[in-house]
Amino acid sequence: MNSSLLRQTLHAANLRATAARMAVLELVRNASTPLSHGEIAELLRDGPWNRTTLYRNLIDLEKAGLVRRTQLGEPVWRFESTAKEHGVRSHPHFLCSACGKMVCLPEMTLRLEGARGCRKAIGQGNIEVQVRGLCDACMGKRGI
Ligand SMILES: [Zn+2]
Ligand SMILES: [Zn+2]
Picture (tube, rainbow, N blue to C red):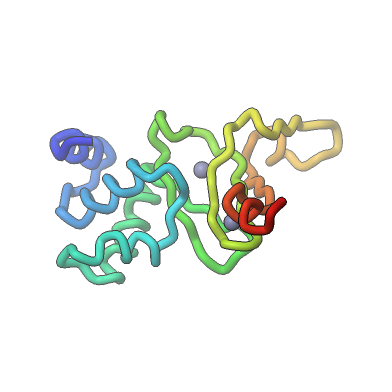
């Protein structure tokens, strides 16, 4: 994503296009998996911004609807892009119980239908679904 497109995206969301915000948005958009604040800080460690600045920018992007925040059975928040190419809607995630790596699953992997008597949030898709297991790499390591 080029910088003028990043700037346009931020302006369209009523955010100022600061260098830190552009860097955070670009990183999250290019990532194929949800990233934690720690991972984002690590990936941008060569930049002139401290962890607090990066965190504040993540929260600004979340409030503006450009990133989605998920917390899936662990004490860390993870952030992912809400751009079309990543999946605008909320989708299930797979968390490896051995290495902690998280990947996005296609929406269709798991389909929940709202049924009589179940919570409204399920029918509206207003839920977070997490599947846990061993990722391919960890299965390989264990010779499964
Ligand atoms: Zn794993
Ligand atoms: Zn995802």
